[in-house]
Image 1 (cartoon, rainbow, N blue to C red):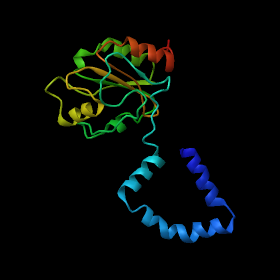
Image 2 (image 1 turned 30 degrees about the vertical axis):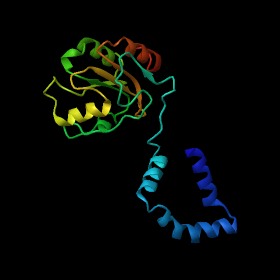
Image 3 (image 1 turned 180 degrees about the vertical axis):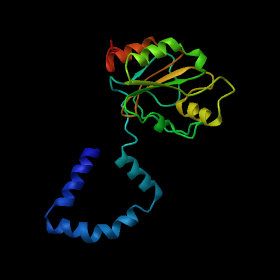
Image 4 (image 1 turned 60 degrees about the vertical axis):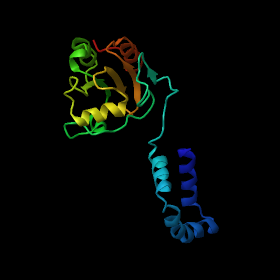
Length: 192
């Protein structure tokens, strides 16, 4: 749809047809402010042009692992943004090139040696982030991130964010078997 819209807009902008040129230069500037006046029209136009609502849930790159949260973004959805306790945001955290592994839940529950092994052997292609501390100690901003991700405080959930900002893999619990298989398939084998 975006490609069709872009193609038609380009054709209208570059045509030499006198009638279309008259409409483009004389009528459109007078009508567009009225058409775009309602807030919902502007919001819809922005989401369409910015492509924020695009989902890839049926893509082979999108995998929900075992015990995935019932709410929050699913594999194939764009990662939502939320403020972090350190003043940053979820989108800024995952803006660096590469794949980002978001580990939700108390850090002591995650197998540190496996996480280190996954990230170290992929030399910068995979970056791990812990999003919430021990139960009861998470700042309000971290709790907001967990709510946006559909994770209850204290629960362990892993989200793998692709370089395009969409969720590639998500699963509940601390078993990383499904994540390792996903990484082998799509990111490639660990570096030697």
